[in-house]
Length: 451
Figure 1 (cartoon, rainbow, N blue to C red):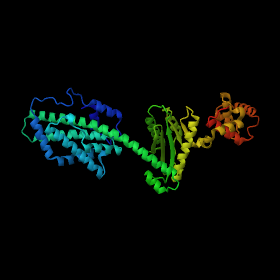
Figure 2: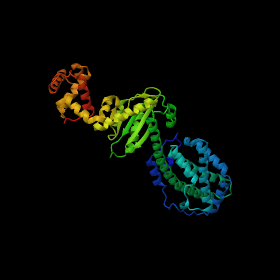
Figure 3: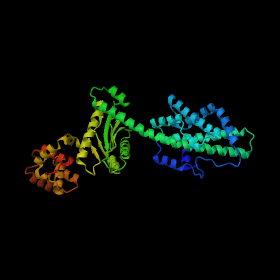
Figure 4: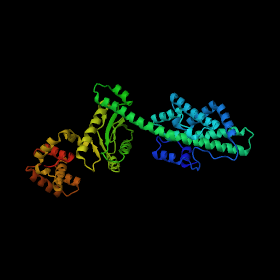
C-alpha cells in the first residue's frame, strides 16, 4: 500500500473540503510500485482463472444486496456521502456500475487497458465537484470499495473446498486485478472531478457576478428579491472589500484566495465572494451586528504577500448598506491605484473618503492644491516633512505639545517647522485653514506632484 492509500484508508474525522493538487499528482504518479506493465498480470503457479470466475459469479448473484451494504458503509464512514435522495440514487448507480465492471472483468478476462470510467461513476464525480465536496472523500470510497470486494471474495472462498494454496492464489489474483481496476478508474475520476471543478467555478462566478451586478445596480429591486437572487440575508450589517493584484504578479488566483482567507480571519466571518477577473475579487462580510475587524492585523497579514492589495468600505445595514459599502470599497480602491504606493497594501475608505470624491478630477485638484500650497507642495523630503508637520499640527487643534508627541520630536522642532511652512506659504496657517487642510490631505493621499 502506498502513502496515498494509507492516507485515504486512515480512519480520521470529516475529510477536508478539498484535496490538494499535490496529493492528486502524487496519486497519479505513484500507481503502486510494480514491475509488470499495468495491462498484464503476472502468471500464477496455480491456474486460478476458473476459480476467479466462479467467485466473481457468486458475488454477482448477490450483487443487489452487496451494493446496498457497500453504499450504506460509505454513508456511515464518509460524511460527504450523506446526500439528498437524488444524489444518493446517483451514488448507488455509480457504486453498482463500478462493481458490475469489476465482476465482468473477473469473469470475462477483460483487459485493464480496455476499461474506462463507467458513465454513472463519471456523472457522480461531476456532481461531487459541483457540490464542492472533497475529492479526497471520493478517492477514499474507491479504496474502501476495493478492500470490500476482496473481503467478499475471501468470504466466498471460505465456503468452498479449494486447497489453501488455491484460495490464497485466487485472493491474490482478485486483489491484484481489483487494485489495478481502481488505479485505472481513479485516474479518470481525478481528471473528471478537476475539470468539472474548474468549469463549475467559472460558471458559478459568472452567474454570481451577474446577480451581484443586478442587486447593486437595480434601484427598483426590493430586499426580498435581492436576497433570493443572492441566496443570502441582506437584513443585517455588511462590510465590503475589493481585493486585487497588479498585472504580472505570480499566481493571482492564489493571491486572491489568500486575501479572502485573511479577511475571514480578521472578521471571524466567511465572506460572500465573487471573482471578477484574474486580478480582482469582491467580498462582503455580513453579520447581525456591525462588523468589526483588526486593521493592524490585516495590514500585517497583507505584508506577507507583497503583490496583494485590499480596500475596505464602511459598514452599512440592509440592502442600501450592502450597496453603499461596496461603492465605498471601490472608491478606496481608486485612491489606492491612483497613488500606487508600494508600501500601502491596505486602504480604508474611512481614511480616504474625501480624497475618493476628488479622484475623478485629479488635474483640477492638482492645479487647485498648487495654488493653495504654492512651494509647500514641492516634491522633496524636507518640504514633505514640513507638510506632514503642518497637517499633524492642524489635526491636534494647533497644539505644539500634542503634535510633538505624535511625531516623536521635540516641541521646538514643531515650532520651527510651522514657522518655516508659514514663510513658504506667505501667510499664517490659521488663515484659510479649511482649504489648507484639504489641500494637504489631497497632496498626501493622492500623491499630487508639484509642477
